[in-house]
Image 1 (tube, helix red, strand yellow):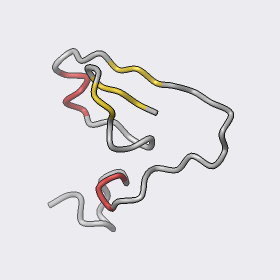
Image 2 (cartoon, helix red, strand yellow):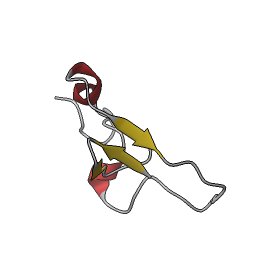
Image 3 (spheres, helix red, strand yellow):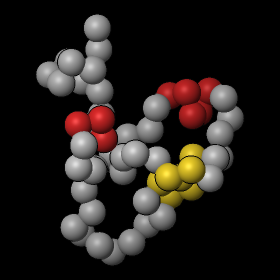
Length: 55
């Protein structure tokens, strides 16, 4: 799992640049669970041209 400033982040696949720019505290919990995915909702995938994430 990923937390940013103590709040659970929506995805295990990417972080938004703003988290780095504003000096957030980012915590990654690493496990041996190979079943962990990005997440179940469309907003858990990284932004890309194919998903319309960039205008």
